[in-house]
Length: 244
Ligand code: ZN
View 1 (spheres, rainbow, N blue to C red):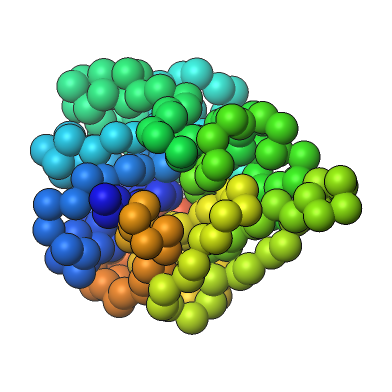
View 2: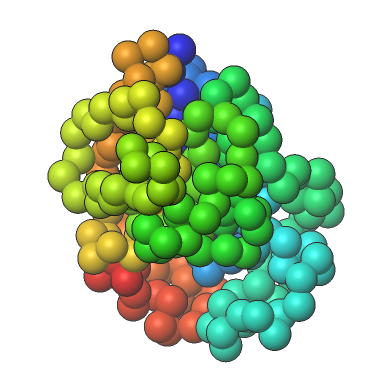
């Protein structure tokens, strides 16, 4: 079975549409949260995901948008984008965000936005944080987003110690997952932060046990123009050009 893995769309409709145009049609879709925040098309992104019947967990920006977390935890630009998003969202799309679960288990995969230990907020950026998190899920694999950086952390317990090997996903291509437990991040569709401005996503094949990691260009100028028109913070507009 193959699944389309997407995360951190952040209201970037041009990027989301480019991913759907590039990916094989009709794959079941798993989304790792942060549908909204930062970008100019929160309603359109949610409506596209609703239409495609995506299985989705909630992210910290989605949480803030439905008033489940304090805006104190956000920087100035992120906070401004959350407030703008709240003012834009139609009631049915807010209701959709309110119904999103914090975690999902699908076969051998646990889906969360941040980490299994703190599903909405923890960033798994380093092997130490990854190692500690293997005790907090029961499946072989855990799929996360939140950092916007594509990576695989594999658990290595050869000497009885829980340590992680890190495989940063730089070159698009097929990555074998192997038998080891792993935490996998497919990167961000709508606001990549690994120095590559292209939208990031992956296709998981549970039969061959592989991850097809992909990067694709999208109409960046379209998203940036809409952000200008919406008077969203300039720094959020600029960062899309550079992938930071
Ligand atoms: Zn995010």
